[in-house]
Length: 394
Image (cartoon, rainbow, N blue to C red; front, side, top):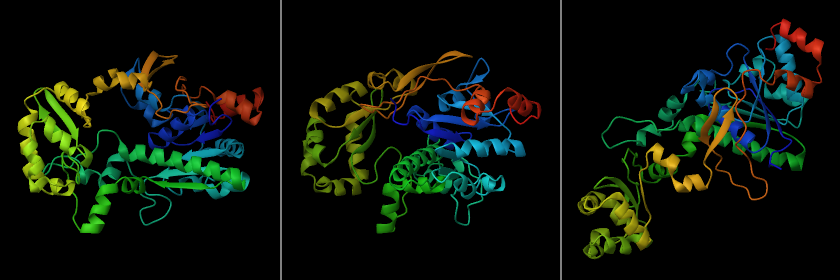
């Protein structure tokens, strides 16, 4: 048994934020039916890297789902989606607000037909506010949401984060909203709308930066690889790379002793964590003089023995090969019928009694159209053939 067995999801989303949300739901056992435009499908099918002409990116984000190729711009297609929605537990869409209403597939209309429906809309700016109808992509949201203003080196150019944190945060908060609404439905018997704005999600992630500004008036900027209020808490250059020391208050004494700088314990500039952060410009060069004398692994061995948190900066190939990552099954293999085995990320959600699974491939475009129309709507041969001939389904 998987935790979301029996939960039916209509996925009207595309590219990343919405599909990442429904990927998590599929990993946890939900039946996710992905509605795609019949000729080209989700735009993510055209995003690399490609293996034998198939998007490995699409495979990784859409694993475990079912694809129905259906034209929702056609009235007949909209009728089919409406019928599917009446039988679903969850709808996920990431169009601009108002788009689904114009198609007759918005929350109010859908909820009248299916009062238990949980309708999750993940858009750039949410369903309300002056920016509600604007479109947004990940990097736009990273810029507007302040993440880029605190990422990078001081005095350097603004930088985006490596992963698409704008889309990914939106997708993850949508999952949280859906699961919360499912729990509420168990008590009330009623569904509800989950309204997620990607900009809201970015603001929610600015935990230290927002409170720093609202309490001190200081506008945070980029700090490179260091923490704004804990020191030393950053990457230092070793003989053969960079090593991260995360020295909180309980570790300061041990840290100074193992690096051979006991005199720092008597220096009033560094007596407390707040003072160490305030006097970072004086402290950092003292530690940097020491760190370049040993290799990254030598420092890790020393710090682990002393009980001081530390670590390397791994490249992606090192992450994939890391024994802890392997032990937690965070790199797994699925077998795609078109390209064979593909190694992708696993699920970080580990449940002791009802675990999810990541072992089902992403669907071919329209692979499950006939099956879903038969099992969900009880349509049979002639009706399905007529829909194909009319170009409503593929």
